[in-house]
Length: 172
Image (cartoon, rainbow, N blue to C red; front, side):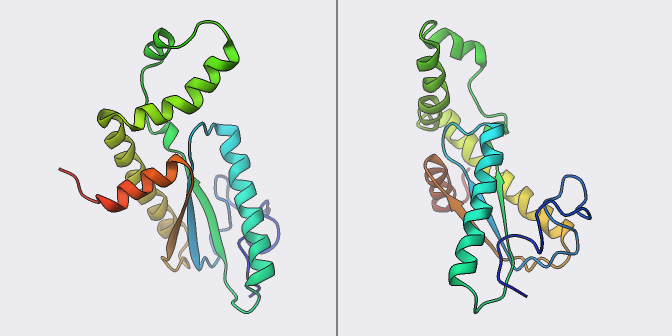
């Protein structure tokens, strides 16, 4: 097999089942799960994931020709884990004017402020741990030829979350 971070052919292969990135018979040698940073929204997560897959394919083609493998690149979205301050609270504490500044503050700085709060920090860490386990279990159940090897690619606040998760794997 050719080394690749993308499935054989195009990611939009006709035989790919709906909701799955690759056909079920794809041999997956390694799973790279991305943990995003602050201000990641639905549309930007899809763009981010496509960019990660394309960049990974470029790296594989350029530097890994001698090692045939297929690495699946996927992501989790901890913003949709249900861990966030209530919207009415956000509306009360952020600027009512200057919509651009308010949006930027809500999308970027509040992620950081929530994470520095013990109430939200541990809820986010627990949610990321659960999302990672669920994503891994999904690949094991869906792709019978998945080797089980996995790595994390984290950036920005996602790196801090992953560090805390790995540094303190079990909390009471």
